Length: 177
Image (cartoon, rainbow, N blue to C red):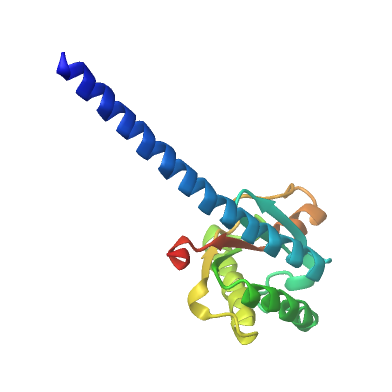
């Protein structure tokens, strides 16, 4: 008869630990969400020319295609520098985050060229943030070429929208420990 009592006690202990752990995790997650939501609101105010969205505990920033690069180029346009200064200012204020810079192209040209160009575009975006004092070790780049278009590649306008760099800002959980 003691066996069922031991099993019941063990089950209650496991349930209590699980409940405490989930409360602790949700408090931490709630803090993470509040931190990211605050950063999102500040970015939205500072970057009115960009599309800023929040997805769970990450923030995505996409600048209009005509702002960043000329067709076939990986060199950022000079007129984007003040915008990147404001962008970097907010990123520096919220240093518990990492930034993934992802470059894209339209589907014109060979895959190898597009992949290389998209990586160069991502690195150009990173470099401009670094020039504005965002720590290099917080920023990662990834070139995806013509993959994941956000518009049709059947029109000039759609192709222009697909030539982009996206910035995904992620909460750095290692920074929270």
